[in-house]
Length: 117
Length: 113
Image 1 (cartoon, chains in turn green, cyan):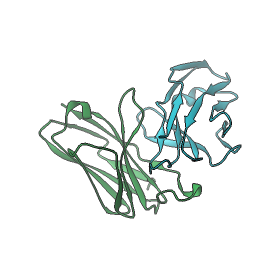
Image 2 (cartoon, chains in turn yellow, green):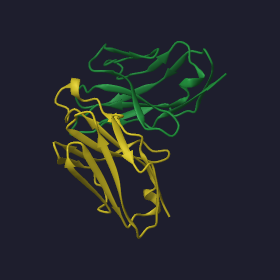
Image 3 (tube, chains in turn blue, cyan):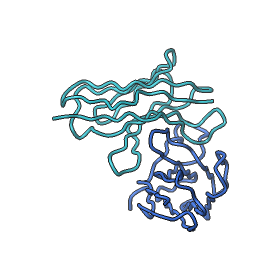
């Protein structure tokens, strides 16, 4: 099983739909992250979880709702999105929120390509 | 806050050419520095990392040295291959109040046979 998996790989949804993105890590890590990758913009950190507790929310609109039921799984619930939310959504994990440089490497999943019509 | 600046490209080179992709940063403290690579249709893969000043990260023929005096972490490879074609991201480790990585915009590298 590869380190970080994401499903679905591609998603097309209308603005009134509700959908969820799933991320699972098989690395025994305790920290998980959601990033947004839009064309011509740097990757943007959205949410951070450490030991299932949310530690960071980077001013993300409430139409994005994260959930972390355990250290291995991370969800991103989507509702009433806008076309400008179309992007590649990347999940990552690390051993823990970095307290030492030996543990701050993040490992990424393949991403979910989201298109909002 | 932390920030990363890197050349955006596209950078087009011939096979076996020497590669340099520039990366400079501003940071609070001295975070780890990373290069990630993204192949078409895939997520980001860690290419190399350096954790302190003067450290050199290396992998698959790529190298980068953590230069505190010039706040730089330039990526180099002596002889590129067509398979190196990808987007390369320079990133700062957590710090300055942020738990995530801070990325540059990415450099699209195209290697022609």
